[in-house]
Amino acid sequence: MKELKFFVATLLLVALAACSSRNEDLERMIPADATGVVCFDTPEILKCSQMLSDDKIIIPAALQTVIDANDASPLCQTLTDLPVLGLDTGSKAYMFFTLKTFGRVLLVPLADENAARKTIAQRAGGDFASVEGIDCIYVEDNFYAVADKTLFVGTVNMPVEREKAARAAAVILQGKSRNITDVPEVKQCIDADGAVNAYLKMEGIRALLKRSKTYKEIAERMPLVEVFTQSDIKALTCGIKLENDSVTMNTHFVVEDNSDYVKLMKSTISKPDAEFLGVMPNSMEYIMSMSVNGGRFVELEQIKQLLKAFAKLPYIGRIDLSQMLSTIDGPVAVGLARDPNLEGEWNAVVAARCSNPGEIVNTIGKFALALGQAPELYDNEYVYQYDNKMIRVGSAGQVFYLKMLNYEQTEANAGDDVELKKLFAVSPFAISVRTQSNDVSGNLTFGLADMINGKGRFTSAGDTPAAMALLQMLCGIKTPQAFDDMIDDAGTTGVGPAIDGFHELN
Image: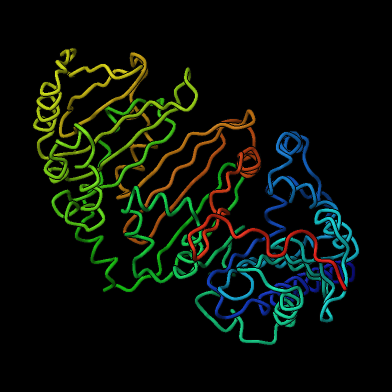
């Protein structure tokens, strides 16, 4: 019996050593100058998502139903391919980003190269062939290669010839150049415990955002976002852990103590407070707050741009918004919920902790009267009619609020939710999302504990394990081309495929 136990223990150690060696082989393929690296603990993800049975990948019936209903989704297509991809289920997979030939590269460990070739060929619509000594397929912007039990999936940054793409992929797969194992801060991050660990340099994030039409439109309308994207933050790290009852995420900004970002946050961020939840209906699907020092907040260049744009609006631009914002000292919060009766319409609530909330209420009342809008005074609220909604303006304690609802509020306020109160009471920035997709409900919260550290948590509202519920929801998202609508240097939308269609060999 002792001999048997020793034999089993030896096999286990050999298996663990082999997995560790395989992970290190893949890490050595990631260039040291990669602008971002993401590590996926494949065994952990498959196990917690109930997709692993006797080392074989299976798709649970509940997940398969969602996949069948969303088969055009890239995530659903990936999940469909997993059981027949020949994946090495005992090793990790990696994704990295660069500013060179390939913008994004996925490295997947394989147990069966032939299975991978067959699956990729069917999905890509072509056959593998040797180019520059590498077994590959190049279709549209995507380059697939199989070598040394590794699947390489790369997306090019710009149109390149097949041979150049093959040479660049071969250099990566050889793993002989300086790599991220030589960069301690990145190595430490991606090797940490967790199902997913990421190290993303801000220069890489900015490069991705620069090519997104959606982000460009957001930045034009909400320049405040550039406080983060255009700051001197060096990098963002993120770690995700999977448990039966929750999925947790920890984020961290890598930044110098005397950086401009830290100085800016120290001067504009105010003490958080959960008092505003007392006027926020608990039916709001999204609740977001940011605690600011209004006097310093309005001096930000990004806010000055917003105020100038606001002043140009007809009628409402006459309000001295700068003066109103300068009285804020604490959370500015927004709550949103879909209108159950009109598609595309939303019910909304805006609330802010102010030094003199009553004065803001009076300012809005005077403005409305100047436009001939005489409000009703009901239950200490000014009530205005707007389209299919009633606007209620009032104050409670130190909180000013404005509600745009198309119904008479009968539900309780979010202040009765103990967990939400804990979140918003300590977080300078926080968001709560209640979501439902494919008959699965979940709750997502995220908050910054300070200027550089944040924590998020996802829980399932039903009996479905958290990891599975999250996966089902992600599969059910009708993915917009938000970050695929690339903008070229000339400003036109979309660069198109690298070379239209499948790359035929000569």
